[in-house]
Image (cartoon, rainbow, N blue to C red; front, side):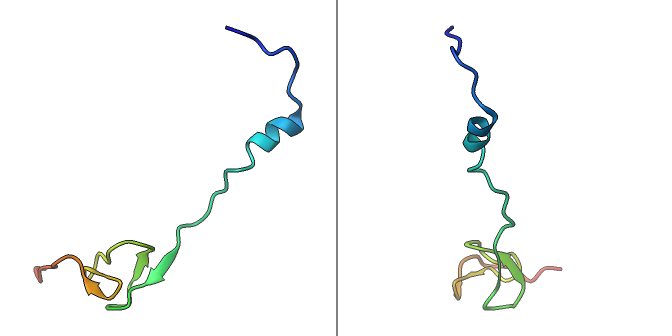
Length: 61
C-alpha cells in the first residue's frame, strides 16, 4: 500500500471537506388541505400531489 510522500496542509484538507452543507429540508404548504409537506412528496393528510389525487385516503379514524 503506497504512503503519501508529503503531508497535506490543513487548508487543503479543509478544502476537500467544504462541499458538504447541512440544509433544512424544504417545506411547502399543500394546495389542497393546507398542511405542511416536504417538497416533491405526496401530502400524507389528503393524498394530493401538485393539485391531483395521488393516493386514495380512507376516512377511518
